[in-house]
Image 1 (cartoon, helix red, strand yellow):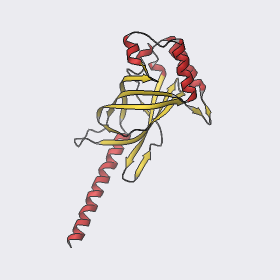
Image 2: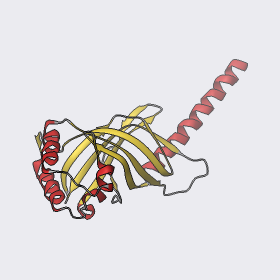
Image 3: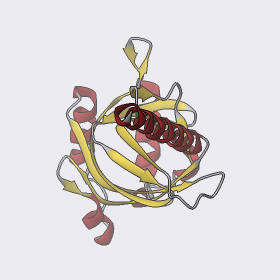
Image 4: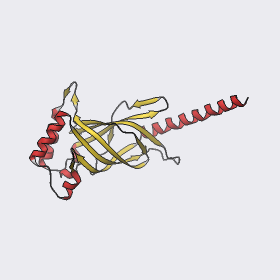
Amino acid sequence: MNKIRNVALLLMLLAGFSCKQAQDIRAFTEAKYSLQGVRNTKLNGIDVEQRIQERRGFSNEERDSLLAAVTSGSLEVSATLALHVTLQKQSEDKPNLTITRLKWLLEVDGEDALTGTIEETMVLQQGMNMLPVTTPVGLASDGNLPNYTGLSRLITLLGQKTDIRERITFKIKPTIQTPVGSIESPAFITVSKPSGLVAFFK
C-alpha cells in the first residue's frame, strides 16, 4: 500500500513539474526580448571596447582581415550580452527557461547578413540577463549559396561610420530544454533594436 502511495505521489509531482515547465516555456515564448547592451566584445582577439575608448576604428587592413575571416568561417566573437526579458504576465514564482543552444541572425535592411550558433547552456529569467557568450560568425545563406548581399550592405554601412542601429535587426532561435528533450523554436524571434551593439560604428 505504501509503495502504491509513493508511486502516486511521485507521479503527481512529475505532473506538477511538467505543467509548471510548460507554463514557463509558454511565458518565455510570448515574452519580449530587448538587447540593452554588449560588453567585453572581442573580434578574433581585437578588443572592441578598447577601440571605443581610444576613439579608434578598424584600419583598412583589419577590415580586410575580418572580411576574410567571415568568408572563410574563421571569425569568432566573444562578448557579454545584456538581454532584458519582459514577460507578458508577471509571476511571483520567478519562472526560468533553460536554453541549450541559441542560433542568431543579423539582418541589414531586411537582408540576411551574418549568422551563428551559441553552443552554450544559458538560463533566462525575467528581467535583465547577463550572458557571456562565444560564437562563430558566418555568412547567412540564400538556399545553398552564401548571401553576400547582406554582408555587402553591412560593410558599406560600417565604412560610412554612421549610426546603423535603425538599419539592422537581430533575431534569435533558441533550443529549449524540456522534460521530453530539447526542442528548437520553429521560427526566429526578433529582438528589439540594440542600444549598444553598434555604438562603436557611430
